[in-house]
Image (tube, rainbow, N blue to C red; front, side, top):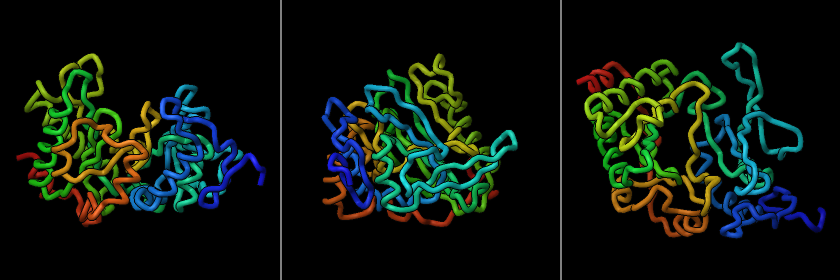
Amino acid sequence: MNKENAEIGGVVLTSPDKILYPELGLTKRELAEYLQVVARYMLPFATRHPLSLVRCPDGISDKCFYQKHLTARMPDDFKTVTIREKDGGKADYLYVDTVAGVIGAAQIGALELHVWGAPADDLEHPDRLVFDLDPADDVPFADVKAAAGDLRAVLDAAGLKSFAMITGGKGIHVIAPLDGKNDWDEVKTFAAGLARSFAERDPERFIASASKAKRKGRIFIDWLRNERGATAIAPYSPRARKGAPVATPIGWSELSRLKTADAFDTVAIVKRLKKAKSDPWPGYRTRQHIGEATIKAIAS
């Protein structure tokens, strides 16, 4: 191995001392070490799910771009799955299924890992329902937390257990795992209907369209994550933002105590996982789906 290279978890890093987060001095090596720690926590939610990566090869202060297809000179532990696209053509999408695959993201400067809502072996049946509570800049985080609680209550009433994740940005994801019995149309229709019902009942607080111009003072309940091909940030993925914040699974009781959606950076997450005495998402593997009873409960 070239003396200027390094090896983390069996993955060779070129230019390991390249700084990716200038304000922290966080290097490629340190990012790889972080990913090595969190990989086993991330993989249960991300393994074999097609990925979209946010790559910033020269760090967050330089050019960043999305990538979802395999290209030359990518780590060997990145795998591909062939997917039929909207235009009828086919393309090879990336996925990972090992710790080395997750670490490999650091080698190519992939600072964010976003995952499909369905696994590679059953692409037409999502295994989660995701609502992204995306507030306007003038909405206090306390209001976003209250909105997450309201959404949780409605999902509970419909028989869907849900879990919270702060995104490392401004918002909160409310996620309900699914058992794969629903197809994309069913999940999308349900998500859209629920988001619109919130907006209709409380238009001063919520909006169900992506319009930036109309969002002032409101929270966009982004249901569009529930479309075939859409992605959402993976649990424990860092973000390509100042301070290296991390998308963090949170227990509902803990959420009430947090002051921001970017409360944890890569250093804090490692400490958090070492001290953790319990899973923040107990029961995530519960078997549930969107049935007629669920839809009727929402409608009422």
